[in-house]
Every structure is written in C-alpha cells, then in structure tokens.
Image (cartoon, rainbow, N blue to C red; front, side):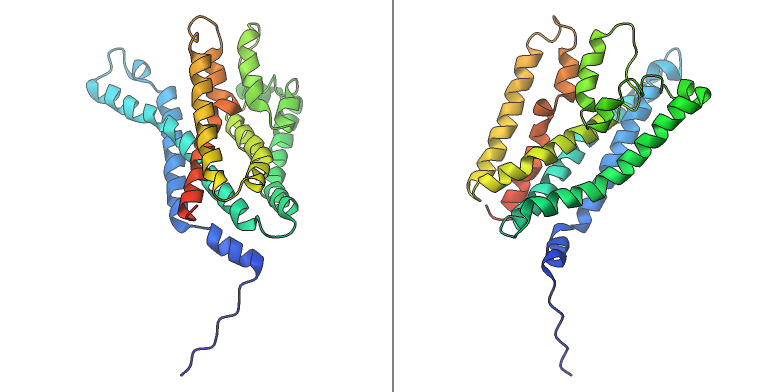
Length: 251
C-alpha cells in the first residue's frame, strides 16, 4: 500500500526540527553535573574534610575542581545553537523580531519571576535575608534587572566594607544575554563566508584581552576577577560555538 505523503513542515517547525539536536541535551546534562561538582568541591575542599586529608580526598577534590569547564561548555552550546538559529533565519522576514521575541519568552518570565521572589524575601523576611545573603540584593537590584550583574562583580572587590553580591551565578546569564543582544547583528552583516572569520577574530580578541588584563594581575587587585566575569574576555567560547555552527553548515 502506498504510504500517505507526510505533511510539509511549516517554516517555524522546520527551523525547530533542524535546531534541536537530541545529543546536545546529554552534553548539557554533563555540563550541569560538572558545575555542581565544582561548587561541591569548593564547599568541601580537602582542608575541610580532615586535618590531614588523604590522597584520595585530594584526588577527588582535583576532579571536582575541573568542573569549572562546565560553564565554558554551556557557553559553547549557547553559541552553537544561537548562531545556527540566526543563520537559518537570516533569509526570512522579521529576523530581529522573531529572534528577540523568542529569547524574551524563553528567558525573561522565569528570570524576572525568580528575581521578584528573591526581592520580596529580602525585604519581608529577615531570617531568609540573613541566611541566604540577600541583604545587598535591593541595593544592587539595577544590575540584576538589566542583565549586567557580571559587571557588578568586577566592581565589588573595590568596596572593602561590603561582601560579595548574592546570587553570584547570575553572571553567566548576564554574559549570555549580552551576547544575544549583539550577535544577531554580527550574523546579519556577515556573509556566510565571512561569519566563520568573524568568529575566529572574536575568539582571538578575547584571548588577547585576557593576556593584557592578566599581565599585571598580581600587581593590581581585581584583574583576575575582571578576566573571569568580563563579557569581552569570556565571549570566545560563545564564538567557538558559533564557529562550530558555521562548520557544520558547510560555511
């Protein structure tokens, strides 16, 4: 019996089907586990396990410490997926509107809902405010609302009377949101042949900037912090993901 023809995918459905790669879900899971292990290792370092930690304890801690790579893996995945979406949508109408609308609906509601809950807890419940280090959240909330929290972290070390800002993990989301703001313009203005070179140039620029900032890192307080959280010094992993997206598409 002749098989009925499959219905044609709509344009949005075709982009969605091509954009979702199941194996990336597994890689994302590995990145999550790596980050969790890293923070676990930072919390229970070998010096906290015993006065004289065993070789096994030290080895486990070194394994956990490698988990910081999970953040870079997240950035590569984001650069890969976002660049691929933009390349596929480049020839379609409403390029910017569709991209930013989807990013807004995907991230903003959950993020702002979580932020509102944190602010309410910080203001109304003193016990929660103290236990979870939320005292500074109302004071610095502008940086959270505007996805510029990673720049706040680079300023805090020069304020010796105050501790680190709460919810420090938001810095990675800030870096990604700033990337989403700029990268659609890069993809649009670059030809398919020029985009891979733009990715390479971005990676090289971030590398050089890290070298410049680290040159006197031990002579000027805070340079290591800037290198770690500053968007221009972390964008190379996002650009690397973009380069992979170009290579896979044969550019």
